[in-house]
Length: 211
Image (cartoon, rainbow, N blue to C red; front, side, top):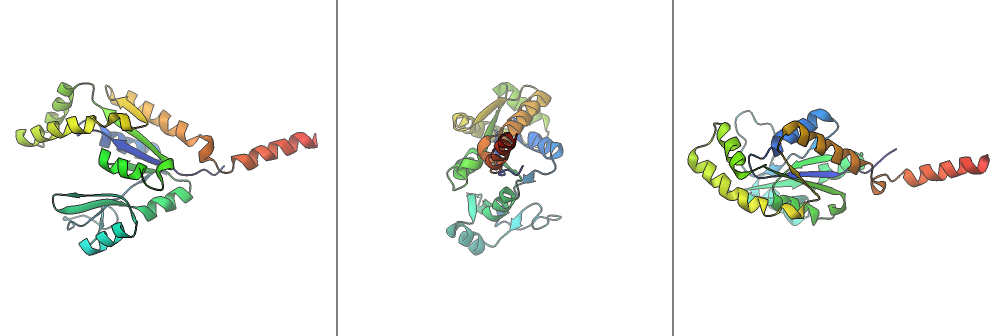
């Protein structure tokens, strides 16, 4: 039966495993659509419009915001970033789910949008702050100063955990992923996400009447 697509939001402090879990979800179900953000920053070498980002001029981006074409947006280091509404609505109409790898501010904007009833939000917590720092350092990508900044931001991120539908503590990646899959499968089966269900039940009743 057909169903409404859902908007799956994953958020976490940096290093808690959000992006890794998002990638595993995309492999688990290739019908999932990853939300490609729009940005006003210039493309970097090798980036393709519509793949890494939708690259927009600042006036075009501001017009999209003004006319309600963005589900969420924010300005980061002088550039705008946001989630275009049209591809998400098209995926929903096709019964496809859209995955958002965004912070609590973006998630809040989407939950408060006209599509809020179709949102399923999941916050990923680290097992401890010491483990969070260890994971950040194990990447070997950031300086001590950058890591300190990420750790400071993490406290603010974690303070919004109670705004989410589900909260998972990522002690073990495989176990957390299994929990995440269970959430997605359960939400897909909700009665209000299956618009054809009432007609199906009426068909069952007609079979009863014909006996």
